[in-house]
View 1 (cartoon, rainbow, N blue to C red):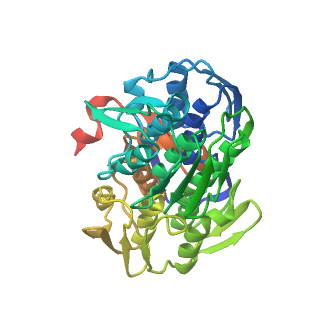
View 2 (cartoon, helix red, strand yellow; view 1 turned 90 degrees about the vertical axis):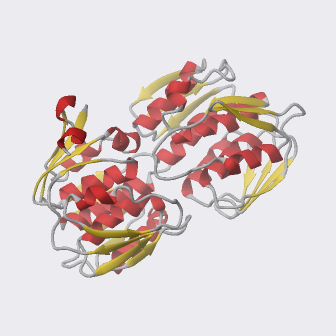
View 3 (cartoon, rainbow, N blue to C red; view 1 turned 60 degrees about the vertical axis):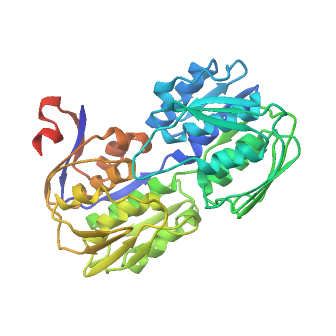
Length: 429
């Protein structure tokens, strides 16, 4: 078992480079299954979810070759339908893209139910609605999803009942080579939706409207290979922006697309944090005193739910009472109990957290209850004076490339260490 140990209190100063976007990379990797030629993906983040996704394709018979740390070559020509290993698929949420990819290529799919972080009910009913609209029959039996399109995958009009990033992207993958035209209404607008569309179009697809709430997909007969670079990770960038503000430091965060960060930048400025933008960087300087604000998470371009736990840490350090409303998921405040171990004053009422700021958090032994909550614990540890230990860091490693090394390079006293299981967090508490 590994843990992260932080001796907090050091302001962060310097440059920190953001890696490729996790949420774009995993979707693009599974979409490679549609293509019977070599694909080279650049700016791939070397994180656990990417490693698992590549191993899934490799286990299915695809040829996967790492050309560099962040460059991978994939040839899925010989991939076998329905052969994905259950133990890998169940480790991550994004494995559901395999359903759309198998359906798009083989006109049928057989995939185990996905896993991933547990912060409330996250059904795939909208995905199933989309696959059914394309002419498929869908059955879920003993935790396995079976999809068959006996008359082929045919274009259709699909109106999502709620804005769903995964559903939008899965439908784009499934419909790229469908017969006829598919129109997605109430589509998600996130940057990784646009990135997936750009990747598929580079492979020969005909997708228009990505980034708006209506996407039009004209099915093509086949896709071809290409070289494609994944966009920078806006959530990783936002995490480091908040880390700078929480520690009283100043960070230049590079390899970013500033427009993707606008909702985060706006809230930081509202709290008094100075944020300036360049073509591919943001410069964040901490405020002398953080102001209280109210936040509600919303689908893009609103404030991202994946930044909610990190921002909660910053609100804990602001003067006054802030309200943090979760507008996307039902149960994303499980990490609050961990922050309370660090003396945070937070009350949760349904989907709203009432956060009363305090001068300083206290060091403690805590754990990462999910990916973004884990990042929040890291920020909290950096903002304390003293030793914080974070366990269950496999959640953090699912989505952050070398977070320990990157933070250490800008002044954090942070390291990853091995902890014997007999003195784990659960037994200490």
